[in-house]
Length: 125
Image (tube, rainbow, N blue to C red; front, side, top):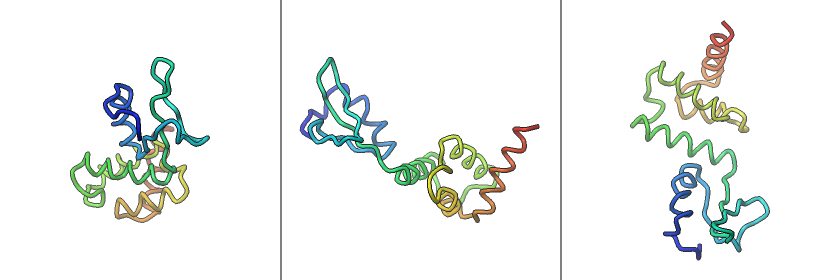
């Protein structure tokens, strides 16, 4: 990226871009699907968003960092909370999302579905 990394806009969006697993680019390198950000009428930086499946991997990695351990090592109640958070963030709309989450949690797909169904059944009460 040829834009100054210390530009206030770049500094402001970099933590979000990193958390999403996105990439910062020079605006001149932006493709049709990239988001170009401007500052006072001048294009400063382009953001290339990751594929949804890559975003899920970044979300799972961030959750592991937040909990300070592999998700598979969490207790059942905490795993259920992780599934609720992931559902709220759209993780299960990603192709193979349930399988990816089940693998990260060290549980079966059936268990993830049970966590989701349990949460949805308590919402209806």
